[in-house]
Length: 267
Image: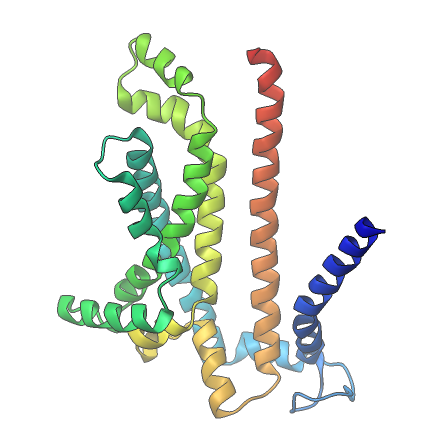
């Protein structure tokens, strides 16, 4: 009975969390100009508006450009930081790890104000590079968490064996460490891209009118002239996030499966 209550409670929580999504997504296919129920008729009008209107199409392109740049930058820096903290060569590793993870807990408004002041002094305010740097600051903690977890699962004796055979550190990293950690690196990159794609508060502070992303355009549309195009954009974001999350889960499952398959052989 207790197990049944646990399952029922878990299902109820999931339904409660998903209900807002299920409520808004059908409105992406309404023929009405208002976000209301019942839906008078189903139409692809707002999906067509999302892909043909210049302001929405530009915001989608901006999101892809900024998200891709932030993902590459955050993945490289987060992977290097994870490798440095793993070796233990740096002093006060715990403090450094905490500092790297601060963007996950610092309020977005505080981070946005700080990034705006910083980018203005560098002359990068309202530029694609500035927005990319700001988004990468938010994305790096997700990469560090994912890559650090992957590195912890690597047996150090494998790297020591490669070094004892004469392989230099660069070769050990390229031929041994990186292939074993690549599922964590890819998972971190996926989470970084999803984070950049959904970020709106930080973008409001650091982006100019030419760097308006899809999330920011949705926020502006809600404030100025709300219509079902926002629901169509939300559908696009949700589908993209679910695909990225599914890919990350698949990579983690394959990593665990390969670890279980190699364990008996190692014994």
